[in-house]
Amino acid sequence: MFARIMAVMLAVVVLLTSVLSVLGAVMLRNQQTAQRLEELKTAGREIAWLASLNRASTTALMLGFNDDTQRILSWKANQVYEQYGAYICVVDRRGRMMDNFSVTLSANPDFAATLTTASLGQILSDILSGEEISLRTQSSSGPLFTVGVPFVQGEQVLGAVLIQTPTQTIEGGEKTYLPRVLLVAAVALLLSGAAVLLLTRQVLKPLRQVAGVAHAMSDGDFTARVDAENAPREISEVASAFNNMAEKLADTERNRREFVANVSHELKSPITAISGLVQGMEDGTIPPEDQGKYLTVVGQETRRLSKLIGDLLSLSRLEREDAQLQLTDFDICEMLRRAIIRRMSDLEEKELTVDCDFAADPCYVEADADRLEEVVVNLMDNAIKFTPQGGKLTLSTREEGDRCFITVADNGTGILPEDRPHVFERFFTADRAHTSGKGTGLGLSICQRILEMHGQAIRLKDTEEGAAFEFTLKKGKKPVRKAAAQEAENA
Image (cartoon, rainbow, N blue to C red; front, side, top):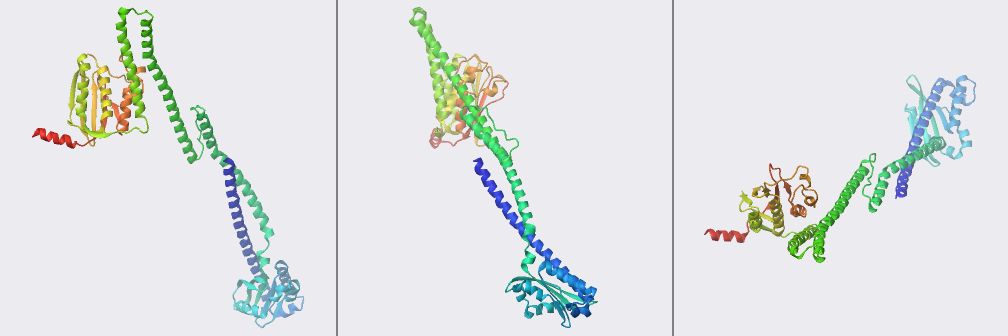
């Protein structure tokens, strides 16, 4: 993967470098062309100035007179010719003209063939009108550059200087700039390649760490994490998400191991007690007259074991992905009353008082009645278990907005502050609660899961004494059948 990414990025760098190099070459060629044209025009102005000083001897110049101005003019014309291979023509208004046609013809016949009177007449006319020109024209032998400059004395145009040269002498010269372009392109390519290599390594480092951490996690090591402190934002976000996932997986694995350990402990305790007592009866360690008492203990431990297994199965069913709710509308106050009746023997045994504070009665909710009954029974059992002799239980309901609030409270021993954050953890009561009652420690976990399936919540309320658990449910509608029966009863 790293090699493919590197290859793609280097290909992009090479492509961009090539495009920029071509653009740079074109720009340099245009710049050089403009510079040469300006130099050619400057040379034309110098020749025009010298011609204006030598107005009376233009024809004599062609005959090779030794006047100093004539020699300078001839030297300048030869210099321009040698540099540009140009045809140079100096003409005044009386038609007298000097040029280097014979030299041009011998050096470049094809170019000289394009220098006809017809082709130059209009150009000379424009120059003699006082206009400087700079043209790129097309001829039979190829494109030409033409520069024309008038020479004047005072404000009077005395004549014209025309310089014409093949385009390649102006636009050519790649040897002057192409090596520089190639050198710059090579340096840019090397620097870009090095930068891409370093950047790619820096970017892919966290990804390689992710792969390493993933392998470690597949081997059961959930402590490894990805360090992406100096990575780009996108890579850092991926690494952060992966670390969060690893943390959750570590928590899940820790909870799994803890759950297995707790289940093993909870199953082992009653099984050990039952096995020991039965073995004592079998080998005569426990005399026959005492076996009835110990059979009662065996029965209690068996029921405890059955309750634990039932709770485990219930929690397992609730946590299945295909677990579904059978939602109906019913009166939660009626369900609470039934729960009180079902636990009447336990309430009377401990001489507990039950106070029903139903602000909303009836209070119709939309929920799975069987699941909610399990919640109510678990909360009632806990309240009865941890409330002392002669205590009081309070069941209350109220409506607020589109929700109903149901509370089960007692004035028992309460829950210590350090234990409050853990009350909904599995096996909490069995392993860590500072209470004297026995239980599986799964009841509140089951309640929480059932309410989560309903999209609702349960919480431990702050109270001055005892413990109070409050859960919410979605408000329901009054069933039609019950409404009709109520109206008949009222009639």
